[in-house]
Image 1 (spheres, helix red, strand yellow):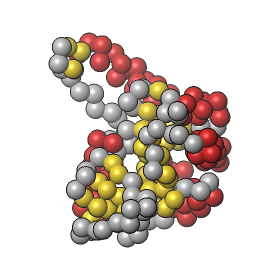
Image 2 (cartoon, rainbow, N blue to C red):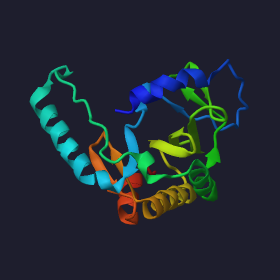
Image 3 (cartoon, rainbow, N blue to C red):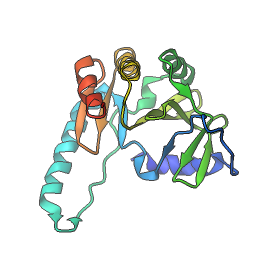
Length: 200
């Protein structure tokens, strides 16, 4: 899907080896994580549900003792996130209002460092939850998340509120392609159901 777009520009955003402060927020993701848990326009709901059914059917047919014999290639979203015209400064201000930290750098595939200040990929969040997004001109092109174990009630509430705000104000939903589960971000109960799986 959007992976090739991302790979086209990430190399130019690399920086030389950087020493980070032990308290600095430096999120990380792997190539396979790109848009694997993504936030997209609500208009894609029917399309996503169709894709998840197709993936589930193929998985059932191709499962073997070693995994799966076939790979499903997801189609591009019918309504691209950039069509919502979400400005970079709007998304950044929204996330910082919910106390999300702004990352200066991202660790990509372990050995590569991306510069968020000069590059097209940005990251905001906490040590165990990050919202990544890539950009085109002044607009947000794709949004995806990385979620770990949430151990703080305060943090849970901030993440829930931020996702709910994006759902209500921007008309967005969350699709977790790992579990093939779709969550409406205008519905706090659905957000809670998603986050509770990672809350201890």
